[in-house]
Picture 1 (cartoon, rainbow, N blue to C red):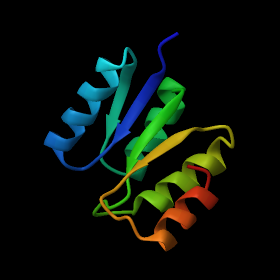
Picture 2: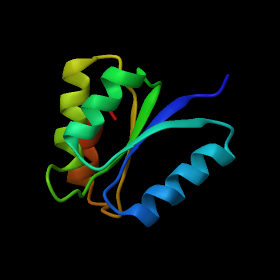
Picture 3: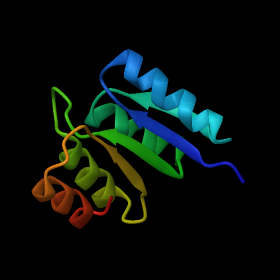
Picture 4: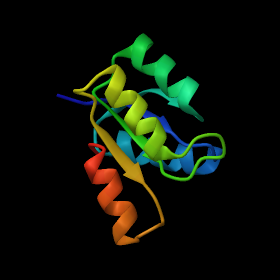
Length: 98
């Protein structure tokens, strides 16, 4: 059964690339967002199976978005997308539920 996903990414080209990868795997992108407000709206409106969230966003970082999503729905699933491979960042993201 295909997953219904939301892509949270501020860069339009990267957002489209992630969307294409998700769809290539047989899943569906039900919404796209650029920030926390858009992610929360997508959660309420679409009740997705999961999110991909960019760690480095201009308004709020991905960790803040992940925490807000998990507070609104403790069962929310997320994949954090980042070019940052620092162990400390990885640990924080995993601790937050990614």
